[in-house]
Length: 62
Image 1 (cartoon, rainbow, N blue to C red):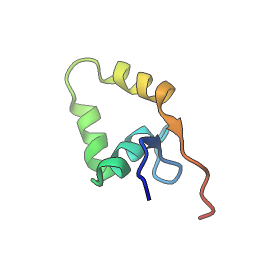
Image 2: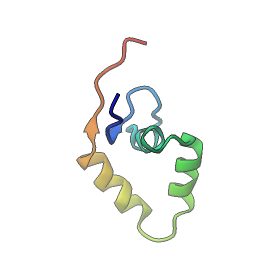
Image 3: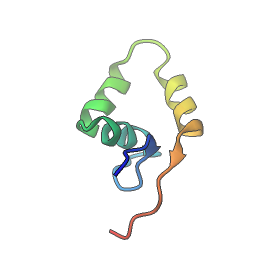
């Protein structure tokens, strides 16, 4: 199955951006969240851009 770059519908705290990035790269979502927290500079701007540009994943039955 092709792994698309989408927001996560199951692993989300705010909008599913970090969960979607983690699913795409096959890493822990906690690691992605920590990178966003400690990323120097424009972390909020990058997050807002990703929230608005990343596609939503289809809803899960689980």
